[in-house]
Image (cartoon, rainbow, N blue to C red; front, side, top):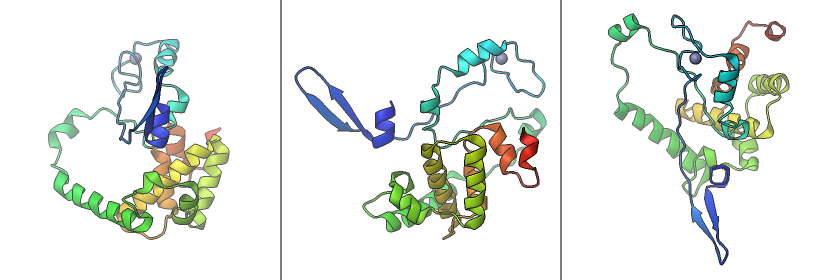
Length: 201
Ligand SMILES: [Zn+2]
């Protein structure tokens, strides 16, 4: 799984020959927070032991998880909220916004490439954040020991958030949003302003 995720190609080696196929795809996956599914639920108790939860989450390896650019914890929807829910934006409107952002990226990178395909040099050129954004990212890297891969992936996601907004500059708000998509609760707390980093322990 890691090779095609990383370079968009899959190699199949047999005794006689080796063939390479294109394998550029978008991987979307979902999992429960624990075997019973209620860990972190506001009202329903979770029946799992901490070692059961550890075993369950360990089934997805750290290096694989690190390759998911966007990881979101989805809390249960409250009944009242569900009943009162107003219809959101239509898919057609969202698709238009996505198309516009992709066009910006095609023009910037050429050859029908979008942000996920940026190489390191392009990331440094096009996804470099403003001063406040760089400062925030530096602090996050130090505090959470983020890998070089995470760093580049956060910048790509932040560049895309900026493109969706039609912003030329990647700002600290874009970096903060991209950091929240790393899926770690501590990071979500970290990027909220006014919380001193020392209080995170
Ligand atoms: Zn549970």
